[in-house]
Amino acid sequence: MTSTTALKTVRTLIAPDKFKGSLTANEVAHALAAGLRSAADKAGKTGAIQCELLPLADGGDGSVDAAVAAGFTRHSHIVAGPTGAPVQTSIAFDGTTAVVEVANTCGLALLPGGKLEVLKSSSRGFGDAVLFALSLNPARIVLALGGSASTDGGMGLLSALGFAFYDGQGHQLEGSGSVLGQIDYVRRTVLPQLAGTELIVASDVHNPLRGPNGSPAVFGPQKGAAAQDVTFLDESLGHFVTKMAEAGFPDAEGLAAHEGAGSAGGIGYACLLLSAKQVSGADYFLDLLDFNARKDTCDVVITGEGSIDEQTLAGKLPAAVARRSGSRPIIAVAGRSLLPKERWPDMHLTQVFTLAEYTDQDSSKDPQLSASLLQKIGKDIGTNLLQLSFT
Image (tube, rainbow, N blue to C red; front, side, top):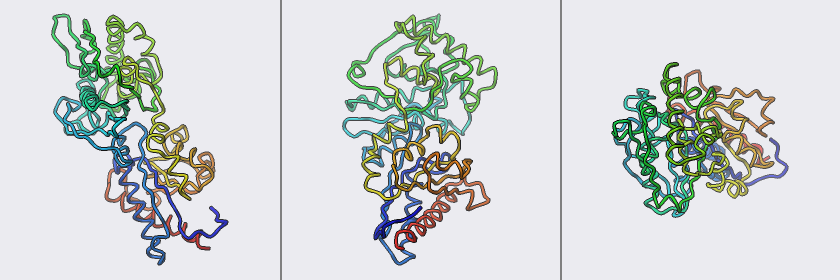
């Protein structure tokens, strides 16, 4: 990084994603900012580094928090957790747009005792949150898919929104992967509130519902699915698609093969049945949080996530940030980086700092250590920026 003019103040935009399993995006941003400011204080240049914090999300866990940090209002609500036990969750709303996320309603992190329950888990809680959002009369609802514990094709979501599923004996079924194959008929109800509300799916998952690249095969194992469970769930989702076609969705089969239908254990499929519009999670949230306007007032952009690797280059949030940042210096911070230095130009990165370079310990599950290391990294970044700006 070079400086052609002497700057009296360095304006930084700190726009990271979460460090999954360790820190939220908001916590990452605050730790880096604390380090940057301490560098200015130590140099006797208090205030020489200005920090604007913009915690980000890409449609996965942390989406509601990112919206709240950007000015949305948090609304709390109790929903059914992934295995049915009530959990306290929240949505974000700015008077027009509501943000609802899977991770804080029926996500893996909410499983009691952390025990994986891929067959028993349901997307019902996500549906409860969507229903609550509808009560606020939004013009649109952003459906942030990611981190789900379930593989139920969105059966639980649809149940919360007025659909009813029955077995051959006329008993109503609760949504879960274990009962998809028991569905005999579906009573389809359309909520009046849905008719006037735009639904937007924010996700960067492109998998179809079924098959070798489908939700059970690709994401089932991380939710606890053994090989026989993957086969069972794939076949059960096929039955579910057939029953949705019989319920009045003539395009049910085609939508199951659509990109993104397999996101969040098939919740993406249910969203497509509800005529939701699919968008890139990373780019949509950057627009929602007004990233372009914010970066235009800054000299340096600092972004990051837990791991920077080939998947990052494929379009994850830091890559989208870098793409939009123009010619200004872009610094990435990560827990670890598998991207060699010669690949940094692919993301227009000036520097990459990793927690792994600052410790021999595993910081990925240690929030306190991660925050401390990020402050040290922030201080080093700040020291470098001051040297370049005041020479």
